[in-house]
Image 1: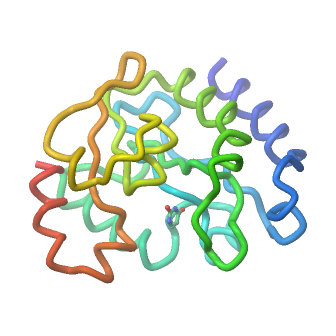
Image 2: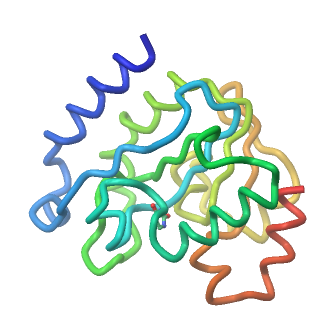
Length: 177
Ligand code: URA
């Protein structure tokens, strides 16, 4: 039943044309990937160039770092679910607007409702804005659990930020432990 729900939601995403600035430039929509009954959802920002070409989240450089963090945390990519606030790549990888996040909200909320995860990891401030509705910084929100419906929400730095700021990797490692 969950698979049928996801397949029909994905059809809606592929047909979606709500974000004018994005829709004419996207190559693929990026629905999400992983186990439909995952205990842990990894929640990112938006597809980048490689994700836009592949139709899969976190396959570029940030995704390679995410994979390493998963392995170090004893998790395997296929056993979690990976999803972004936006299903489509914003032009030039600009930060998603609030309006774009709201356009995509019905899709990611339906996914979280279907998966019913125990934990959601918000990678970076756009994920925080989408899931928690907060504009507080990652630095202020990390280090304790927050709540989204029935799930415990952990906030940490985005892997793309960690690639630019390797000193912060130890903080994310503390969070993942
Ligand atoms: N960054 C994200 O937040 N999500 C992706 O899918 C890729 C890069």
